[in-house]
Length: 394
Ligand code: SF4
Image (cartoon, rainbow, N blue to C red; front, top):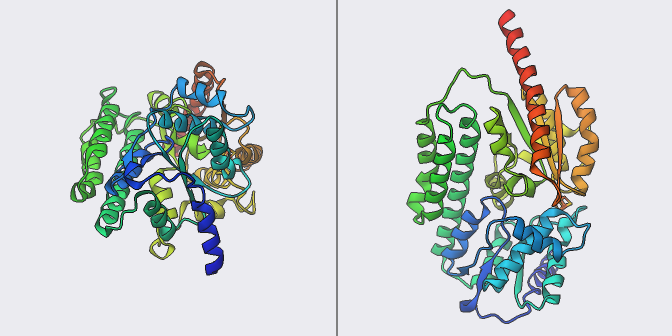
């Protein structure tokens, strides 16, 4: 990008700082999404800014979001808006948000939220990270705009602790998904995960954060499991926000784990962080996106926004790697995932892999979905047992 264009882009990005909030008075907030607050919190607080996190997503947040949004907008926006409102009510005055241009509504989230919040009378600055433009340089710039911190050690500490916390918590989640269906003493894996969540959240030194991932792995290894148990593996695919937010996805990972299924979610915050923020010369291995482009090539030629390409690519990859089934979850009216939803029946037939579609919105009751998930798990389990029997007979 030439210098003039970059200058214009930065001007546009930071032009949204309309209120002259002094740096020392800044109270920063961002929307809830999975465990993102562990990393962002470590970074922002090490740069010296105060943080007010909105409460975890609940029915109350959903109610606030639905009341203040247009009806047809997707569910993640409604919850993001509710998070902003609740944070502003609790004293936040600087809102941070990711944005991505492209063919889905995500590109309009920040503009729509700003307009609505201003109409409601809130005074705030909004700092936007453009996911396709914000590589390391722009990211540092955005954090400088929020905190005015010029101490390089604080940036090093913030990024180092933030990255290490993201890797540690995602490792703990992966191990939870593996251990839960196999554990001998019910609930032990969940307790171990919750314990590590708190330790990871409260660890502040760079040295201690670097050790977290290893300690998590060692602790999960101590949980007694039934190694011979036949456990079907299911990929959980779909839209980024619903995959990461346990309130929105109705804790589907726990439901599946309790039914004896190993969930393999294909989207983790740390993978995304590594790929988006890290300069590409340091990123040696094939990224998740690149793998999906490769596997989806017979069904779609290019990305169309959201996680559509990832959903299709991961489904083909799963079928070729002995995964027993796919659960595709999406918010109601999600544009990219509707496209994926229409391609998946063909992928399912061609690649011989069962797929369950779950569409989530504010009206979705948990009981109905659990019945469908149980029926799907039955089907996947029977298929798995048949495959195991065939193996023994050979
Ligand atoms: S991916 Fe779907 S749910 Fe997410 S912002 Fe885009 S349209 Fe909305």
